[in-house]
Image (cartoon, rainbow, N blue to C red; front, side, top):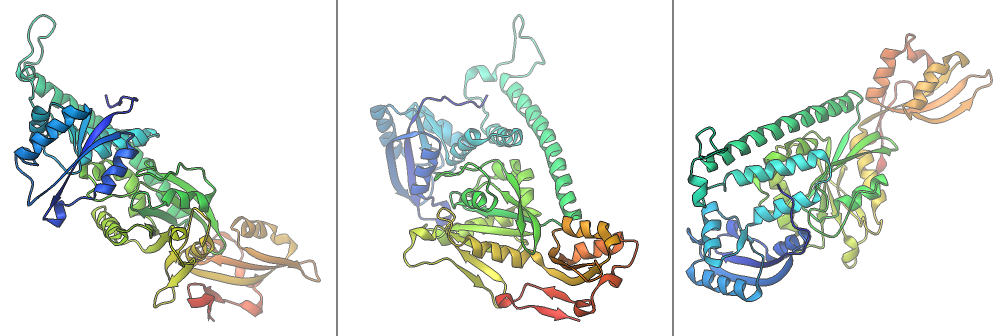
Length: 448
């Protein structure tokens, strides 16, 4: 139903500047969206208005100019860089005799092309059906007739009513399937929380370099390209941090200005990873002239999906395109990482990001020197399984002298699991010493 023609289509772009800032869109972004959709640009119509015209959006003069341009270049579709109502789309199509697509429809088409997983395809179809349901009207006379004749007698409803009913039934079916996917994801999140494994979610404006950074941190092979919405399907990978231990990194779909509400609703299961994350890496294209506007737009979307409460580490990417901007780590007044400047493409500053993640995720660490007898081999194996052994030597009596560094949660879990009290293995040199690594310049706080 939603397959598109593989042959390249030609399009005329329509961009209108409005006095109201909320109605204003970016022409360069529209061109990038069209290129991402694989459509050839053959014309551009621009203009200025105080506000959209109710019937034709751009007014009678501009609509005549658009009709002439369509006839001259023989375009396949006209793409508006603005949201259009269903009636406006129909009125424009009748005048210019050409298919009309608005900004939301263009984004949905890109998503339909990029979806690869079963979940992603379901989410895109749900968004498309939700968008289509508001535009399914009786544009042709036959849609308003009741079925009749041999083989066509049925429920006594109009064709339009039948189409709407089938859409509703398909939407319910997809929502039921996505609810199942959401439950499966929730089980995975609960398991990670039980094991005290933190989740880090990459967020940011589309084409900010999230997937490139994801690949750099995880040695993954996620598709990354210099185009909008290169990533659609969420990807989770495990990373190991020296002090924080195992963590899960999630690569998510990029945000965009005026993100359609249908998409936000359809991608609820995917965006749940962002809402439930322990830390957000807000990746920013620092070379983009609209960097501040993009940051504000991402913050707005995070507020819409109720993820604005999650701690954020700013990651300013693409410093290789700037002059005299070395990679660096910025700290806040409390001495904790606030922002990292790096280039994921050129592998510059990644060590600063890893250091920041280590500090923000590790939390309270327990450091001890344990003197373990040869009979404590089971405990020794557990310490190695938790990646908590810093060093190990042998004593004069054949005992194991083990220096450990564990997260507070892992240490408490060990205390409960062992039948014998572990305190008797602790050397007096480091008795009950707790180290907090979240201090400025790597300083530690020892609590006796």
